[in-house]
Length: 313
Ligand code: PGA
Image (cartoon, rainbow, N blue to C red):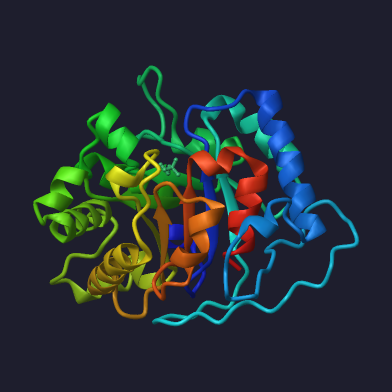
């Protein structure tokens, strides 16, 4: 597939990271409620969103067939790049839930991703899951470098880079997660950490800087697009969200750094993650370099998840 699996433009994406939550029946029920909400055009928690933008739109036309209301025009977005699409919706369930989720979402435009993969495509790696396996299970995406895997499994940037390449080799779109800890922020290291994680995670997917000829064959050079989630570790699961200004500062830096790595023409989609809720999503998405969300806790409640989707159009 073309690298990082995106189209030629910045995209709007709202993704739910379910982490190690839910059982199969709960997951299937969530999907049914999600599709009904998307098809109805009016998320159940819509009225909880406080946004002055006025233009709430729903993204997907391929849920259950129903008399869906007219979808309002997308809200114009400032900043560099070109955002003209409704948000894409992606779910990242844990591995055992994949059959139930892909079955429940069959025929819809909601796509599914895995929370991890092994760098190798097969072999003696007990407990691991490969790119071909998650592709076979219906995944289109894979999370790479989530801070909980960096923390719980000591994942290094070098390992994450190998996972990014494994995803691409198997036709999966990697969603690379980066973010600083509280200590790193307080030490003034935020931007250095973000640059290191971004460069490190993409290091094997990028052409060597001194090899312009190789750039032509680099997947990044195909201008396919790059999807990155900025997830400050201190904001994940804590209820402490980055302010819109803090998120914008990080996103602006990541966009500039990614452009330096992948070329100015490469489409870079930047998601914010870290205690996103219907109450704070509108302020964050209003920032020129925030293109969508990677939602943890609030993605376990279809009403809240729908409300976040609704204000991200
Ligand atoms: P949270 O998690 O929304 O619960 O903070 C986000 C994430 O870890 O992706």
